[in-house]
Structure formats: structure tokens, C-alpha cells
Image 1 (tube, rainbow, N blue to C red):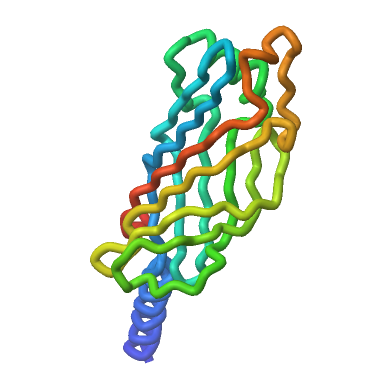
Image 2 (image 1 turned 30 degrees about the horizontal axis):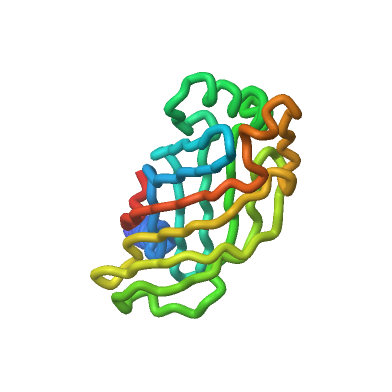
Length: 189
């Protein structure tokens, strides 16, 4: 009887390990994605970049989740970075930019090539969620997702980001955002 119980327990543990492994079998992640933004005005250009964005892609569900801490954006001028976090983004109150979406197209995630994709979902900045369709390109290399890039525009008013009248000529209403993620097979620690 003890032998049967031991065998049943061993089978259950093995099944649990396989189930956990399969849970992440179709998952790819990026832990150091690049997000940059740029705006141009008559007075000055504003540019910043973060290389600390994270992204997870599940090829079975086509689900994409990306997140970046606002405080990780670096500016050439320290004062710009301070104003960005304290006055515009209110980073203590709204610490993250988040994309929660799915890939609209049917893709063969094992066929190498670069594909036009549309992410349909929710884009959240400054605590305001907006339904968005974001176009980009997904490169599949060696039979798995390798790189995702996108360039899109964010309107400050869509996310209730206020521009003080004193600096209205220094900050554009529309900001161009560029995203670049390099994926690896997700390995649960």
C-alpha cells in the first residue's frame, strides 16, 4: 500500500512540474526594452529614453503586456527629468506606463520573417487608460519571436497631462514614442 501511495505522489509531482513547464512554454519576455520619446517645439526639443521597460508575449494567446516605470526615463537636462516626473507625469502618484493588449493578426509564430502587427488593447499613462490600436513590426527568428518595434503618437490631453501656460511653447501636445523589445524564451526563476 505504501508503494502505491508513493507512486501516486510521484506521478502527481511529475504532472505538476510538467504543467508548470507547459504554462510558460509559449511565453517570451524582454526585461530591458527600450522606450524613447521625442517632441519638437519652436523653443526646444525634448527627448528621453528608458532601457528598463519589460514586456511579456504569449504566442498561444497572442497577449502582450508591457510596463515601464516613469522614473527610469533619462533626459539630457536634469531639470527636464525633474519637471517630467514631478509636474507632468506625477510619477509618485502614477508610477507606470502600461500596455495590456493582444496581437490582432493571425500569425505563425514559428515562421521566420518580419510581420506587420496591430496591438489592440489598453494603453495607460498618467493613470488614464485609453483603448488603442498600435501598429508595429514583429520579427521572428529561428522559429520564435525575436524583436518587436513600434512608433506611435501619444496626445498629452488624452491622458490628462496638463501643460502650464508658462511652458506651453516648450512642450508639444503630441509626443512621438518609439519602442524596441528583444525577446528571449521566458524562464521562471
